[in-house]
Length: 382
Ligand SMILES: [Co+2]
Image 1 (spheres, rainbow, N blue to C red):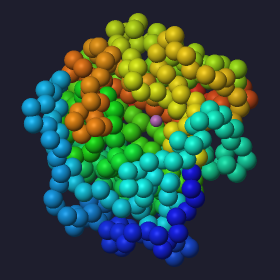
Image 2: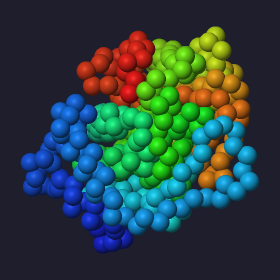
Image 3: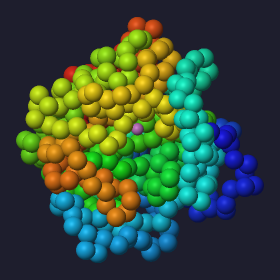
């Protein structure tokens, strides 16, 4: 990954105006800078934060784009809304190489993944990795607090963007391989990579928020699936099983475990509860690269290479479906949906391999980091 892009090379951006409404974080010039509203702030502070997030981007050009879905046969009931224009990178953060690339190509990933060597993080690098994961957790929790019926994906995206600006984070999905937004919002039958758009969340939806952020050259990656109001029993079953599949895999993380072993634990949990596992998307190494080695498939009998060693950092992010495991891609080139239109859920953590087990780098604040807590629907109820 290329470090900081020289200021002069940056395009004069809309976010310069956006930033005017966001507390300055440079040189401690603003008291708020050190303490942007966190996920546990008071209701009043939170409302202020949301209002500021939405206000700071409302002057963006109104014209929105919609890829051509004419004649497309949808597999389920979710329909795309319109997608507002892409934001410029937040000011003052360290940009990954794809941030300003015309097609968002991550050259560093192409170069380094050829070696297949899994980096070992220690010392200052590991400290930065811990820090970015905890900041990523704050961003996810802030966005999750905002969820309710009527909120649109686009509004969630603006809240995530503002939370990143406050913390001098680059939202990793922004322009990655051309992705238009700062977060993935995947509703119901959308498996992953849903583009935030004008569709309002509805009572009974399940929604996955996949937050990835970059701080001082290190990426964090985590996601959770939430219940919007009252959801049906099947959805509760799916979300719980998916969480437990990630937890089952986590229990194998320690030095000496082969990366290919995780898939069997996930698939066992899924199939014993009548769910299927998506095979098209994998967990991955994370750190200086948003996506690096190793690949971590979530299904049994996979051929993943590598053995866990202390200092390895990677994601596990199983996607489970109520119906078949196969997916289809929307004509927008991103949105992956289930082939039969039935619902899909996902959970993801960034894990560090320690001397005798693992640390959940993206754990919720106040929870033990050496194991995942037992599933509680309340965690995810909105
Ligand atoms: Co990931």
